[in-house]
Length: 114
Length: 107
Image 1 (cartoon, each protein chain N blue to C red):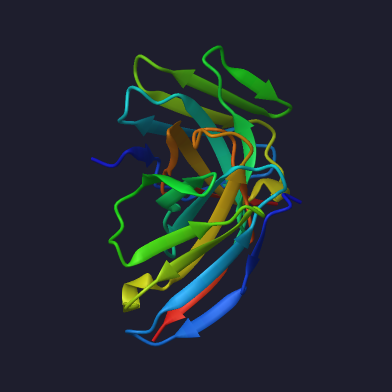
Image 2 (tube, chains in turn green, blue):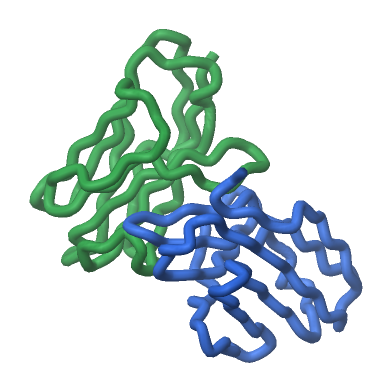
């Protein structure tokens, strides 16, 4: 296994609510990336953190925000949930500072917005 | 134009067949290239990195053509266990995924 864990595994929210998803990376992995994967699509890059600083962002609105903590854990926060936010949310980590390195994925959190 | 484009699939092949997947990418400054495998309702897992010289891992062969911005994956002697979605991934500061090509290997 990759050593990357995510919680919760499943979540149901209603439109307009806020959600926080959590990820625990492998010890020593300084970079964490978050992805959104809609049904039938590939993962879409949301953003990336390196040593607690955001250092890359995909085409997602500001209501998607994140944090990375010194203990290799991180959070993805989504405000004002919309129906289209229903997806599998994946976090991935790698040891170095480059997001182009091999990434190791957690099992994901399935979010359903009603 | 999408940053990473793959054959839409799906591919349905018999056991023992050889199957090839193709992928193109738009960012000529891309630095790293991978094939990931994703089983149904699971997370993506690294299948293999792709190097300019081409590389092989058992029944799997990956090729990269930087001039054409093209990546391929060849699977020989397909097994039932190869059934999955194959994701082409291109890295440049971050990772960009194709939509995936679904493969079903049938007895």
